[in-house]
Amino acid sequence: MDGNQQVLPLAFAVVDEETYPSWKWFIQQLSRHVIRGRRGMCLISDRHGELIKAVHECPDFVSPHRVHRYCLRHATKAAGSYMDIQYFYGNGRDNPPTSYIFGPKFMATRLYDNSPPKDLTLGLLLVRPMSEFVGSDLSKEVDPSKENYGSVRRVFVVCDQDNSVKPEIQKWMIESNPPDGVKVIHGADHMAMFSKPHELCAILRDIAAEY
Image (cartoon, rainbow, N blue to C red; front, side, top):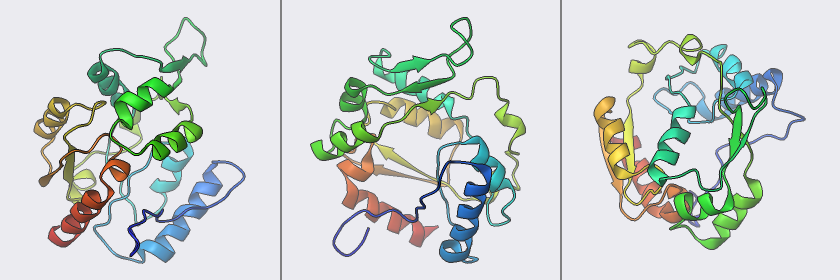
């Protein structure tokens, strides 16, 4: 967040497609110009096959192990129904879905319900299908060891009005894998960077100073 209280991306690049060479180049630039040898920085991103390959070749990055499809399962369980989430069956209807996309109703009532309308509108314009990673053994892609996963100090930020990952599920996540600290953003929906940007920024600053 800059001096005008505007949330800006850390880095971005325009490429032809999301391929291994593109991700590798981007990570190299991120390491050279943003990380610059500093330790203790935590970057969070969607899991993308070519991105995972590129990350594993960069010495500045370690990969905590998290299964992406669990997020959808918790979200739909908390929501009480799949609502207007649309599924795609790349391997045929007789097999599990391979990807999904959030619908307008789900996004408005479960993700952006406390966020400004303009951010919901932009989210609806930019939403894209996400992979379910069906058939992939993610446990073989990364090593959730103490040396890797345990080498990064973790802080769990609770959004107490998140209607997709309910507070009770967030509590379960904390109890199942205790972090080094827990912070709470009161009044934040799932998209805390839109619903409570100032509070999120303050907490991130506190985390950076404390950990």
